[in-house]
Length: 116
Image 1: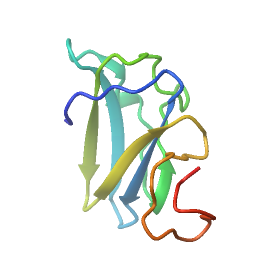
Image 2 (image 1 turned 45 degrees about the vertical axis):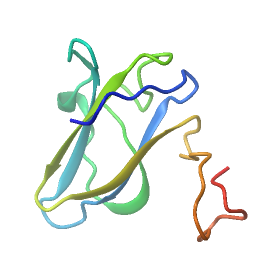
Image 3 (image 1 turned 60 degrees about the horizontal axis):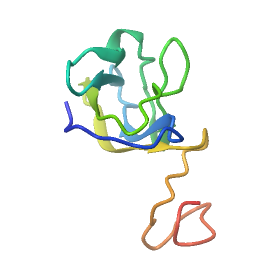
């Protein structure tokens, strides 16, 4: 599990940069209440990610939105199997996964040094 994080209620979508393309590799993501540890989005409901990509939307059987927490702290729970490698994760206001952060020297699809 990760340390407690908080984000605005507008940030409703989770994304990962992951390599889970190897046979048998997968990533599942859960979201827990930081105080009680109760699942807000459980690993059991997580749709397994089995691809190698820098921007993969996290989803659960009930959809893709994170629970409305409005700056309350949560913990993300990551289950990596079969050689899966997780490089980063973030939350976004958009279903396209724009972070609003800096992208260093840019990259494919970026027209500026910010992911906007």
